[in-house]
Image (cartoon, rainbow, N blue to C red; front, side, top):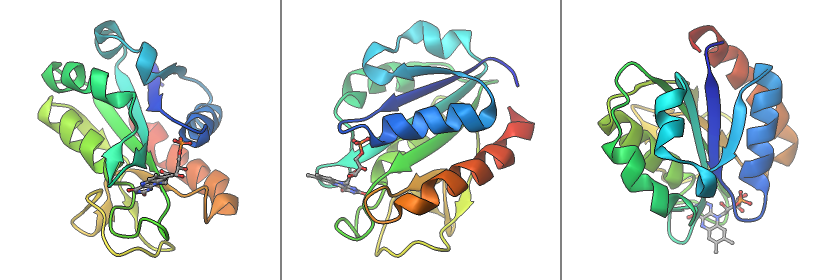
Length: 165
Ligand SMILES: Cc1cc2nc3c(=O)[nH]c(=O)nc-3n(C[C@H](O)[C@H](O)[C@H](O)COP(=O)(O)O)c2cc1C
């Protein structure tokens, strides 16, 4: 695996836990809270794994907002990006993991190659901007309703993306 950083935003610790588990399953990678991330992180790593829980009415976790302009204006040509999202598909069924869709759009606009799309099988929700062409743009997690599935989902995803990192 080339140099990899996992940058996440988390309010109550779920996306933070996901970041830790992803690193463990990948067998490496640095972990950074987005509140402490800098432009250098985007330049110094070849692979970026970006994650956020979803808050409000389908919004990014708060800490992402000060870093989003940096991400959007970065040149990510030649970088590989994978995204993950944490949400609650039953209570927020029409905005499930929308934050992941926002991270995907930002990384794509910055020129990154994006990997790690996954099936929506096994989830139940009405709408999500993180679904494109019938698939999640990355890894969707739901610790509120499907906690026991999370580790297996992360393991499968890590195995899926590892050959491309
Ligand atoms: C006020 C509030 C708003 C939320 N809005 C959404 C939402 O729009 N979409 C979604 O998928 N989850 C939503 N959630 C669920 C959180 O994303 C979920 O609980 C997540 O696990 C929190 O992760 P964190 O601890 O990393 O911040 C919301 C939760 C709360 C309390």
